[in-house]
Length: 283
Image (cartoon, rainbow, N blue to C red; front, side):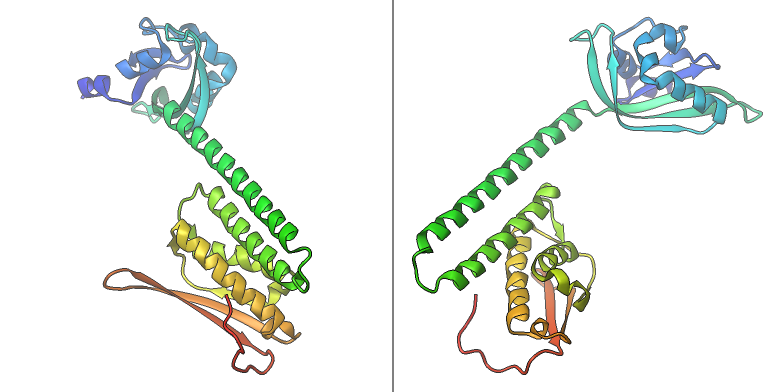
């Protein structure tokens, strides 16, 4: 067991007494701190740079209270024989109290993982995604400007331009939602709520959503945004939300088909104007 601890990929150290004297440290811990001569020393003696960073205070609290301390994505600066000499690391770790036969704290086990590379990768990815989102929004703004310039002298184009701009705004809103989740799958409810809030505004109390949590891929989420935007626009202009007493109920269900999972969306308007067969097909 001891050999396993020494060879474990995560760092492990055992501290004894209220002064936190190093009794054991595995190879990963020694590599992390950049020192080989820490056994028999207190944390303050062996790693003086961590004192001002609050880690000794955390150890004191664990020793006094008997409660573990969990560190998630905590930055630490170490000044051992690392390259470079001063190393900024990101750690996930736990300070776990060791109890003696009378349930009193006699020491602390330090155990964790260096997640610096993972954190840096996520930071770079977030930067790239934010840059992509910025460029997409700029592109949409340019497209909107080109359309306005192209059709500004076309008689009767105002209504068409308003519709076009609303569709671009819906697309931009959906793109923003996906960017916030790093283009991971988006929840159906979140996609619907974002699109409907953008379209309805003061109609919020007259629209209900009901359905299970289900994640959509980015391409499907964008398509659903455009569909719901068109339905919402139609409801405001001609449907249930064009009159005071009208309302809209949006519900969905998810069923596992033989070849793929099927999402069924139901858009139900009530209390609106009397409907008739449309004269032309819409978007």
